[in-house]
Length: 228
Image 1 (cartoon, one colour):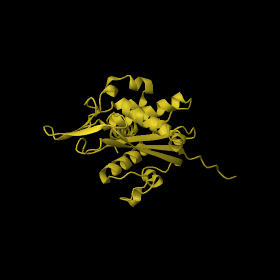
Image 2 (cartoon, one colour):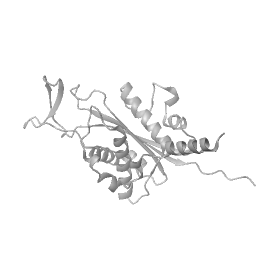
Image 3 (cartoon, helix red, strand yellow):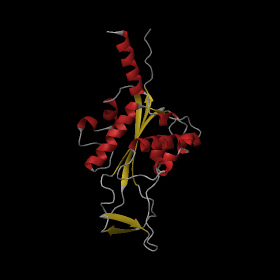
Image 4 (tube, helix red, strand yellow):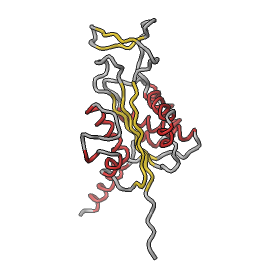
């Protein structure tokens, strides 16, 4: 094979395996950028930006706890993305995917992508994307054919989270749960994949729009020692 073709193929493979630039920033630098402060466009969200924001919020919590940050892993990310997408597509919420037996469990989902991890853990979450208090009102706007979420007393309209605030809100919910917190702050995990999928018909139901989120953590297998 021509050496130039080999070189081009090697560069293409490197680009495929390289994470998008947002994963390479420090969390504080990432969250200082203006796109993170934009409100979620619930009809057409920037899903990649949201995935990176969740990754960065995860590492922000790790750094604040004095732990090493987690590195982006494409296989864990793909497994997380597939599971978040399945939960939205089939409208369920859980760690088991009964709609695809080859992706039934976390282990199966990750091992479809790679077998390099010795230990894995998964956090999932379902959180609404509109910033509201615990109790709020809902009204249907006949002109726009959309539901609106309002303060029952002032009639003030509640707005969606920003990309940054939604990712940070989700991480706070996990930190407030002992089991999820143990996964997120486990020092033995070194890699992570984070993904978010938002509800497909925002503003078309009385319940507020929501997202389903997945964190997949991994610790690489220990190298086997050669027998003497």
